[in-house]
Amino acid sequence: MRPTTAPAVMSGTPDLRQQFEFDYSLDPGRSLGRVGGKGAVGPVLYDGRDIWRTLDTPAGEATLRITRAGHMADVAGWGPGAEIAVTGVPALLGAHDDPSALVPRDAVVARWVRRWPARRLTATGTIWEHVVPTVCGQKVPGLNAKNSWQGILRRWGRQPPGPAPSALRLPPTAELMASLAYHEFHRFDVERRRAEAIIAFARRADTLERLAQCPPRTARERLQNVRGIGPWTASIVILLCHGDPDSVIVGDYQIPSYVTWHLAGERRGDDDRMLELLEPYRGQRARLQALAKSAGPPPRHGPRMPLQDLQHR
Image (cartoon, rainbow, N blue to C red):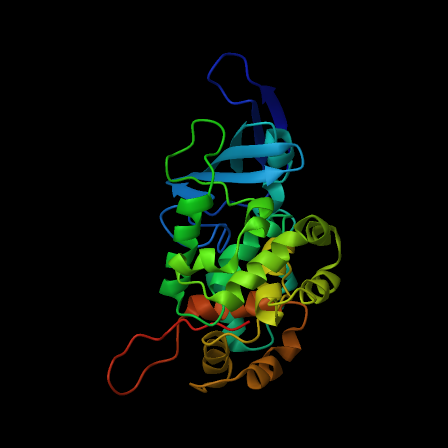
């Protein structure tokens, strides 16, 4: 990967421009996965080959426009945090991940590797931005979680720097979230338990953000010391922050059945059975979970009903 930098030269241009060349082809689709949460409004937006991303950095707010073409990414940055944000683009696009570390041990996984040979995990290097949308997803259907996150963004999200699309929003600051009362979340269908988890985390956000520099296992364990943050939430946050291929998600309503169906032909699975099947792939278990979800759900029998995306702490 070879970066080149070009500073802005006239009014209205980005504060920073940089190109990155990768030794793999960049996914033209939604390559950042869960980053930004779900919904029409958010800190990540997709426009063809362009990814718009906004974030807070130690130097201040930043907006990025990442244009992908083959092995190249052209990055434009705005705001006082643009320089820091741009340096994180390679990891954001998977340069620090190694898909070849997944060695198939059965025909099913071998087929997945052939089908998705270059799927890479993103790593944002940040903690707080993932907490609120993830906590919104605790023990509720996916649509409810999305609506709650969208409501929070519309109410407390911030306009990003630069010529960003109108739907791009900076997430609420930890300082603001820490100052709220739990009942102020009720209008967004976030009950007291989840609201207090967000507030408790926000009050320690400065300290907890340093976990981005810790090994994934240590970071997961320390996150769970926060009231209302359990293994499900901690694993997703660290999966996104670190791009950890073994940040295995437990306590999810759907994922165990995806894994047990594809790896053992069993339509209904629980965490114990899922972990048993994933054990030969220790070190790559989160990657296997993602591939199993991409391969599709187990077949349904009886009346066709929507499968709730119920998730647990």
